[in-house]
Length: 203
Image (cartoon, rainbow, N blue to C red):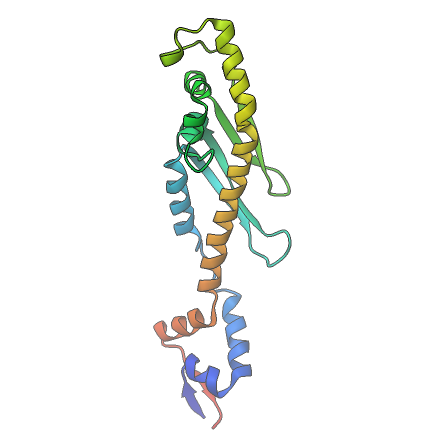
């Protein structure tokens, strides 16, 4: 009998290596391995006005796999960062609407339904705002017509929904990449080396 490393086992007895590898996979992820991804995602979202209360995900190699988050989006901060087209943010493309949204304090609450799709509760009441800044000279009726027209054109509710869905897809991609990395054969070999685990084989 001979003691060999996991790397040597893969070369000398591939079937035995596969059994040991799958056995390791059953308990190798028994910890919150996603914490780092969660923190990086939370920090990244905070920079554009989105508060992440929690993330959720499914990585079962099925059609139901997904990832997303629950939290809140500050619409004015989102407009300041989100691109409307190649040259302008939403705030730049719709300045009157931006002024109204800042004044209103509009926000979006993000929750998840039983199918893990993000549900958005859009809370914006620009109809109660008043002309301000460069628009201060407008009368109330002209102001309301302007912000209403810009709100319809900007379609903030649909665009925030698309943005939230896209960030969920980004999160899923990052989680999948991390999971596959820590559950790879190379990760198994590295784990065995760190823990000085060897395997006995016949010679």
